[in-house]
Image 1 (cartoon, rainbow, N blue to C red):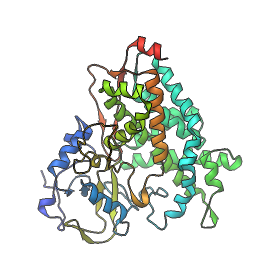
Image 2: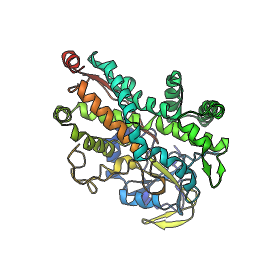
Image 3: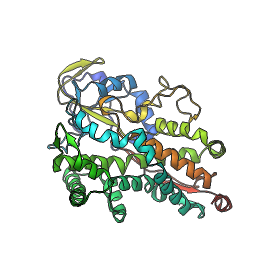
Image 4: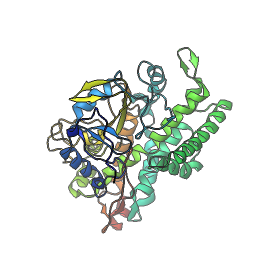
Length: 405
C-alpha cells in the first residue's frame, strides 16, 4: 500500500489519520467516537484522508479560526476540495461582502419574527405528536423529527406541502458521501425546484421568505435571480436537515432518562434548559474553512489553500469548557457550545431552531410523558459534514398514550 502523502509544511507529530465520512471510531457511537479522536489526537492535526486537511479539536482555537476570516476564509467549504464548488449566499462570503445579505435575512429570523410564528409552529407540533401518540410507538425520525421542522421551513418559504417527500429525500441525499457528478446533479435539481418557486412568487407575492427576497434591496439594488437561488438553496439545506438531526439525537438521550422525562412533564419551565443541553451535546454540523494566506498559528504552519475542519459538535462535550460535560443537566449554570458557530457566520436560524425544539418538547411530554427506545435497537449513523442518526424507534405504554391524548 502506498503511504499517504504528507505535505512538507506538516510536522510529523501533527499527523493523525481520521476519515470524516467513514472513520471506524464513528460507526458504533458517533459523538463518543469523536470524543475518542479528540482524546488521542493533537489539538490541531493533519489527516491525510479526504484530500488531506487540518482538524481543530479545541473550542478556543476554533473560536479564533471561525472569527478570523482574513486567514481562514468561508469562500470554500468542501472537504475534499473540488473544482467549481457551489457558492451559497451569504455563507460563502467573508465580511464585509456577506453583511448586506445577512441584513436582508436577519429581520425574518429575529427573536420577534420567530416568536410571531409560535402559534403556527405549536399547531404543527401538536398535530405530529397526536398522529403517533395513540399508537404506542413510532420511528421518531420518520414520523416526527423529519416532519415538524421541515413543515415549518416549507411554510416559511412558501413551498407546497405536496413536495415534502421529494424535498426531504433530496436534503438527506445531499449530505451523504456522493460522487461529485451526482452531488452536482442533485444540487441542480434542488436549485431547479427553488427556481420554480421564485418564478411563481415573481408572478404573485405571498407572505413567505421568497417574496421577501424578491422585494429586498442589497446596496441599493434588487437581488438577482442567481443570488436568490443561492440563498434559497442554502436555506433549503439548513432547514431540511440540521434541526431534524439534533432533535433525533436529543430524543434518544431523553428516551434513556425516565427521571428527566418525568421532570419535563411536571415542570415545563425546565424545557429551555433541556433544549440548550441537547444543542450542547448533540450538535451535528462540522464547520470547514480554507486557509486564505500562509500563516503560523497554534503551533502549526498553514499554507494557503489548506482546508481546516472545526469539530463544533464536540466542543460542548469538552470537560475544559463544561464541567461534567457528558451529563445532560437542564439546570446547568455555565454552558459553552459552538453548535451555531460564532462570529460573522453565526447561524441566522438559531432562534428558530431553539423555538422548534422547545415547542416540540412541550407538546411531546403533554401527550407522551414516558417512553423508551425499542428493545434491540442498533443505531446507525451518517458521519460527515452534517451528521445524523438514521432512525429512532420509540415505544411507550398505549394506556399512557391514550390518557395523555
